[in-house]
Length: 173
Image 1 (cartoon, rainbow, N blue to C red):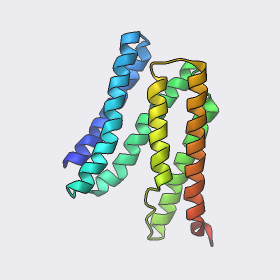
Image 2: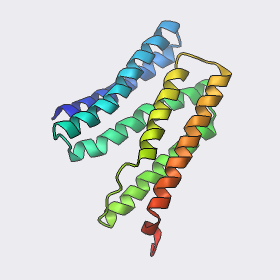
Image 3: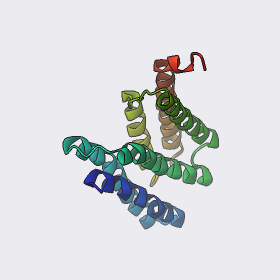
């Protein structure tokens, strides 16, 4: 197993630790959760860099890296919905976009095509990770609403871009 894939597995391993810390609800646990979350987010950037820089791109990494991102972000969002800090429908929009883009990629593979990650998807991931990072320790209404608005905006925009750019996949379907 190469270094890039190990970093992806570290990110996956942070998810249960993060969920445990968030469930404690204590101030020290929330700030520790912020630290764990930052480590997880940094591994997202680092594993991609290492994979490309040191020629460690693998099928495992191509599959697991985006899955690890989804596991991290969606699990934190579920906690926020449970706490009443995020609207359930916001999480639903994010889930629908993720399932939709994943389905689009499967359709492309079936036709011998690959859909590369778009910049809008990278921006969506970055914005979402930053917003959630601020929402972990701070429970301010204005921050929660602003973060949800930014997450929604980037999620819908990137999803629309993926579907628009790959609309030919639906011809003859």
